[in-house]
Image 1: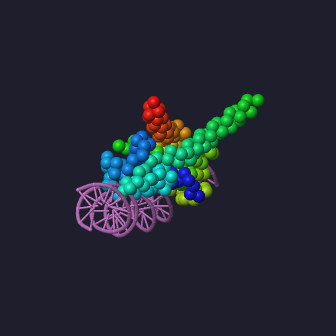
Image 2: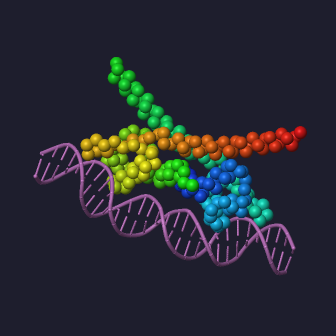
Image 3: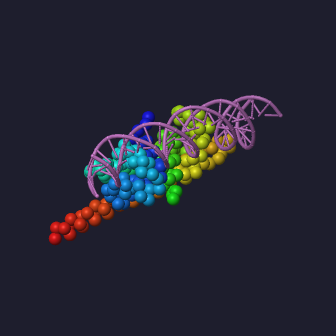
Length: 107
Length: 107
DNA sequence: GGAACCCATACCCGGTTGGCTATGGGTTTA
DNA sequence: TAAACCCATAGCCAACCGGGTATGGGTTCC
């Protein structure tokens, strides 16, 4: 029972990885080298994190000569938004049920 | 640089833990024993996960005799919603910047 | 009071993972 | 062509984490 939310949450759970994704959202397309500066970790680690982000669909890569440009894929966050909405929906429906119950008790 | 998002994402990253939270959202207040059935893990593991969820503010516990009732705290998801909105906002503003650039180039 | 019950904590263990260095393939530059 | 550069992969290690069993405190029921 390992749905799509799994990879998304686990991928975003790591601070370093999430910071990389945030930078790509803020600054747009960037090379691995550019992302490595101020990442606080070595270049191979950055590459590995970008690989995980890519596998989760959160980023896209584009090769140009010896450079590799990465960019955020915001649409990949949709399942996350849906999930929170679903949770809020359950919450609300339970509240409605309670309201109905109270209404029936009132009669 | 370990903000509130950290604990939230990491807490929701584990499938078992997320399933417990989902059940509490769907079914409302439940005891540890009730949650242990169909959790697929032992009672101590459920207790530990509930402890993590509690520390993240995602659940609340209430003691009644020898039972402990847990319930979901939907408000704790707010930072997550804010974060996604922020990411979408960055995305949008960069898009606006591009639009402005194209507009200026058009002149 | 003793037994059964509910839950939390302590402790241990194996798998996962996030970091590193070393290295090599591919590309540009001198 | 040689050298410098960009990036990905491989291999390694320490730390974290999610699972288990054992146990004990607190509560209800005979």
